[in-house]
Amino acid sequence: MTSKTRLLPTKNAIYHVVWDFETIDTADVVDDTGLVEMEHINELLVGKNVSLNFMMKIHERGEPYWYAQDFNGAIWKLDLSFSNVTRDPECLFTFHSGKIEAVSVSPVTYIMATTALDRSVRIYDYIGKVQMVDMKFKQGGTAITWAPTLVNPKGGIIAVGFQDGIVRIIELYNPKGLPVIAGRENVGDAALRLKQAFKPHVSVVTALAYERNGEVLATGSKDKTVFFFTVEDKYDPIGFISVPGPVEALQWSPHSHVNSKLLILCQNGIVVQVPAPDPMAYDAVTTYRIKDLPAEYFRFWSIKSRILREEEIKRREKIKEQKEKEKQQWIKEQLDQGKTLEEIEMPEEVLVEEEPLPEIYIPETPSPILCGFYSDPGRFWLSMSGLDKEKAADDIEDIYAYSIENAKQKKEYDQIMRAAEYKKLLKRQELILLRQEFQELLRINSELPKHMQLLREVC
Image (tube, rainbow, N blue to C red; front, top):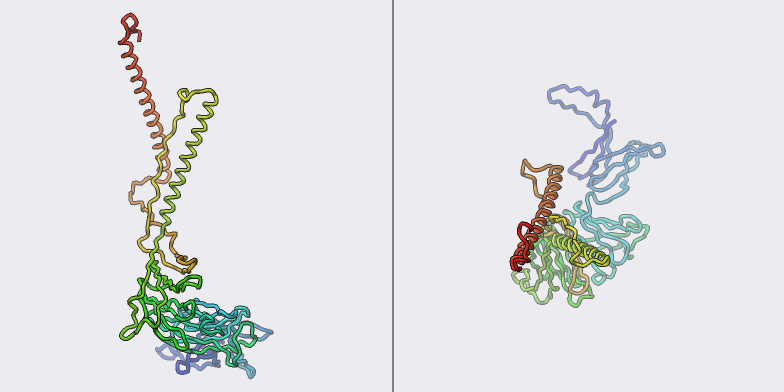
């Protein structure tokens, strides 16, 4: 026997179809089409919105079962015995079919909400390690945040952003009227329902953030805009502002700060800070664009090369100070031995050519911002990527360039030659001094009375 899955588009359902392998193996083509028609033996309806892409046969207590992986994010247990007691397909696990784009934790209990590009929002009890409920949409989710208890004391409101620029307000509730908390044995008591949907952006929603008092919701997008909404039973638009880059994250100032301000972190390394807009100060008659909201702009570059340069300067200064300290210590030892400063002969120092200091390199493109948050009033912290990137290395274009060993030998030879030249320079300076002293002696000798002068032949 062989098997395959088949999709019936009219019903949007997946059937698992079983064929007789011997019939396929012995089939004979009777015409030039190369096709053979045959009927399958059995088929099993797995379910709607199912896309099986892998199956494995397992024996449990002597009975064969098949475990199937659902491309949409599930594991199925299938009974393909096709007997009178055949069990219905059982979905053992359900989960996101791709990477999780965003996650947010409930402010009141041990549950969290996640969303992904598989077009689903899922609620997990991470204490019980079980999924409580999920909800499907037509576009993938890209941002999610749980509303604070100031907005909903029961902690059941979730804001979700999607690929198409839509923001949906979803409520997590219990159909029986009980509070939704972690640890309940009956996870079916949790349900999700849509409360409101609006489209503030024309591109992917990347960030959502509630103001510290729960009065304003800010949404950010790749379309380089931030939209503000009043938070009540119904979310009404206040207006939007444009920012210099795609929005990566939004962060409102905490209560420890005097004023309520929003930190807008752009993907291109620029940070914008704006105050919370007053809903009564803007009347959107012809446009929702807010033109007079004061903004502060911050731009950051990597200073790693400058730090490395300063560290190298300090290192060299420390070496010089150590050498000077050793020199003074050596002079002190000579003086302790009874020598005078004039009698002390300083040892010759070998000049070593210093390598040039590291260049200061500022990347043309600022490092992208990953996240950020406020700390003390007037301060905020950023986490940025790409800070370890250095300037591109210099290529070797000269075909006659030295090999590593030849370059090493040449460096040693050059150092020996420099030391020899330095010694010759010292000897030349010593000869010059001797000549000057000799000329001075000749002058003094010429000024003496003749009977006291030394003859040059004697000199």
